[in-house]
Every structure is written in C-alpha cells, then in structure tokens.
Length: 95
Image 1 (cartoon, rainbow, N blue to C red):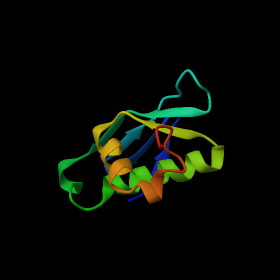
Image 2 (image 1 turned 120 degrees about the horizontal axis):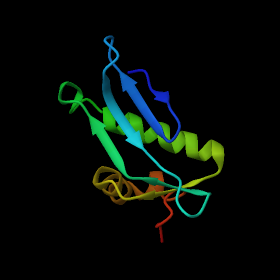
Image 3 (image 1 turned 90 degrees about the vertical axis):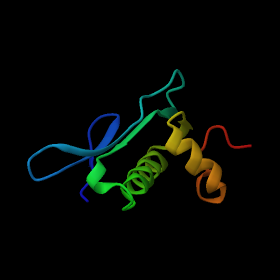
Image 4 (image 1 turned 180 degrees about the vertical axis):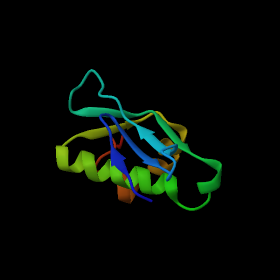
C-alpha cells in the first residue's frame, strides 16, 4: 500500500484514484502537538494491517518533525493503550 502525505493527512489511493485509507492529524493549539482524530480504511482493506501502517507512518513523520501525538481517534487511542512501549515516546498523554 502506497502512503502519501497530504498536508495534515496520510492517505492511500487505489488505481482509480479513490481514497482507500486515511489518517488525519490537525495541529492543536500547541504547534508541537497534532491530534490523530480520524482513521479510515475501506472495507476491502480491513483486517490486513492498513490502519497500523497509517499509524506507523504518522509516528515516523511526527518523530522526524519533533512533534507529539494526542490521540482522539478511537483506533489510535486503543493502539496507544495496547502498545505503550511502542508509542509512549510520542503520546502526549503518556504518563
């Protein structure tokens, strides 16, 4: 799956140019924090790890930019809770 950064989103498109996966992350009031607020994966990709690929790319991008992630998307919240050892360094709400 090819992932493309478009502003405050990372997306994937099929051959017809239709969006098949997306994670959005607008900047918050703190310019060093983004809000992972929405994840979408089309039905034909579900169960294949596409959402995890989106989140991993977001973490990679924010690591490069020196930013933290506030999770409000239910999927991202769950992943941050399930794998704190992987995400605590970037999770703004990590204790």
